[in-house]
Image (cartoon, rainbow, N blue to C red; front, side):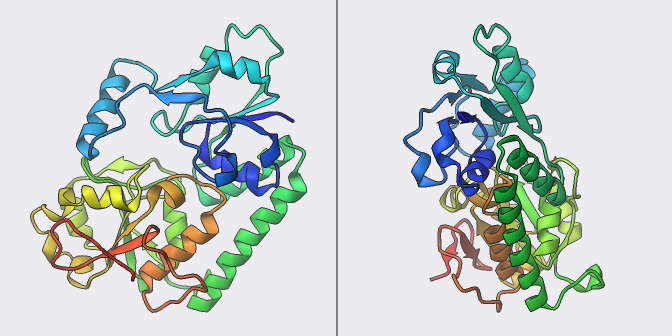
Length: 321
């Protein structure tokens, strides 16, 4: 099968199934695993990706308000690759090429139409359901079941170690806010509240199955979470550190419980949390060590995966080293 993936999460799953050799094209955002970096890149952003949180949001909103697509697809190269299967999504116009946008561009396709597969999970359960559906479409259902089973095993081992199960009262768990954008302030929805629960926390402000949404700063202050996890969409740890002043400069920041107790962490949103990919097991483990700092993993979080923000920081973070 010849596969083109325009969705980073889908690319990860294809490779996790042992089908990297079937991947003949990718998006500009498909940056993992390393073995597929030589595949032709078929997309490019139609907006200015450089800049800080405010500049990027302004560029995106300008395109959206004008009814324009945020991504360009190299249709000529796509046709030349003659894919059997094209992977995309229909969940967020900002995150990757959407299915409607792709189908509109394929409307005049003169060759044999490829199958367009859209991954649109809203919850963690739906992530795994979509993965199995993808495995079935690729005729690799058994491999998909093994991959999902291993992630579920890792989650169960973690929760058993934490002494948490379905009977645990959420009110007894540390409250966690996951920040998915710094300015404007947004909290993570979709599968992230489920990820927080699997990591032993009680998600606040964000709701499982609901989109990421803007919140007022007063709402976060009133929630006063035990843990603040910063994971802006598409940002690495270093990129998030650059923009932390949008949080630390807000009135009342130093008064938050999470800040006073040194429980503010900067996480790699791009690699682990914004995309529901094959590294979800690792993502949940890293978040668990953020919620429970005394928890140790066989492989501790690396500085590129997580850094702590000291209580007196204005816009700098310290590594785990």
